[in-house]
Length: 286
Image (tube, rainbow, N blue to C red; front, side):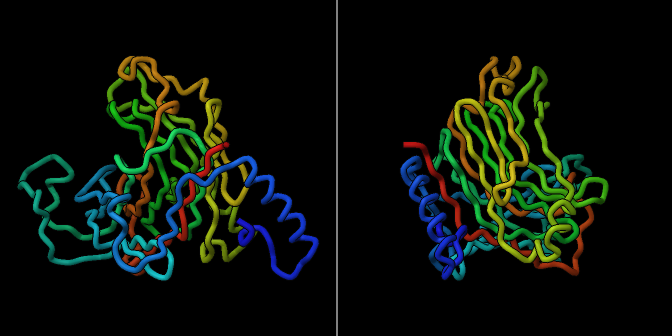
């Protein structure tokens, strides 16, 4: 933690940071971390891989090969491919997963479902995201045991274009009385909010954080609060039987989608795109 907030050689800053770190350590326990300090594949005792066309009419075919650890980071890479047949293809199908004759892009989505699930805590993800046309990187959580959205979804980070304009989003959603119809609490911040302060923002790693407890979900970027969601409002409709999905354990997903409903037109010249995650850390109060 000191490395993030303290600059070596500045005594006054070190003293302040040391006091801050001491207070943090007294209040929080590190209950799980993934530092990606290995080369090659992820630890499959912790991580699952999604496969195929997953959701949102996205362009990519998910596969394990596009996620790898290198130099202490997880790299999720979106690539352009040619001449690869879609094994799901059915001529004349109206299903978006089946009507595509070819796979044109590949990427990865990794999850901790069934292996690492959490109820409340401070979640930190230090990452550098791709921002070229079509990029749709995300850090998110889902619940289990009931269909989406009554399972609950927290988007600690999404990046995509809204009407052609790049935005960073911090959201949560839950269920209503209608199948697959969500109630959203969304913060949509124009990307210029960040790049006006730092023109090199996209070339750097940034800290996404969620503080989640019995009362609220607070979503931060580099310690700036983007959205606060009171759990008093996050009550499911009839399908979720009036439950609160954010008072149950959830699992983590890291993925790089491209295109689809929100990703928009893909800049092929920017491929391969790389989404780099330095670490994931989860703290819970003592």
